[in-house]
Length: 335
Image (cartoon, rainbow, N blue to C red):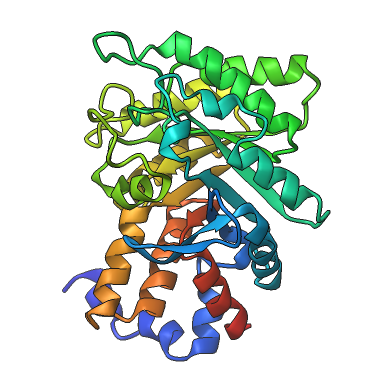
């Protein structure tokens, strides 16, 4: 008989599972509204709140409707929102020129929200895919190869523009090599020493992005996949190298994207570097839960909290999720 069998039934792990109060006391991880980042899509027009077909319950808002977004965030105790533009086709070109317009959707949204002078952080992506006619995060050569260094010059300018419009967190999601150091140095030189720089350090070439590309209008015009610059989903050692480089170049926070299929990557990064680490529960993950719930195959609220808690268990400090408002309501109602 083994030592463990000899002690049985002295060791009964079920004792600390028998009631909610004791489960609360011994819980290793907890989820709060402080862990949630709410992504918001911005579109042109007036008085627009347009539901995205592939993402039920998620909307594109015109700038004049953003008071509603701010009010919802504050009411539900969410402290950070992330803005993404749905750029009209006529404003897209091969260089993503609209990204550098001081009157583009994101700059207009920043101005609108900052006028309210509320305690709400705003995160803005740095990448060209919402603005390019070819749907890529960078500019292309004549033979359709991504031009890394040439793209970085544009990303530096885009970052400075967002900082000038008082973005609290600037988040390069493009996966160009070297852009974090260039952006950080430029922000320092221009006096934006306190602007937070979040790097999408481990962004994978994933099949989970379809609904997002639909939401920002880059799905139909994407001329090829992004495997030459986004990471191979077979690799995790490579993610550690990406993170190490971005930390050295001046990132304040790193992001892992997508989420559920990459919990091991989140855990490895957090364990290795003990550095602020965010996760992105992406559009495809959201859409799958919504579809299953609508077919009554799962209980949506339970799945939302279970999945978001799994990010915390893996080591994420915060989660960018399209379920942010739903999750916040569940959390707040239980307190």
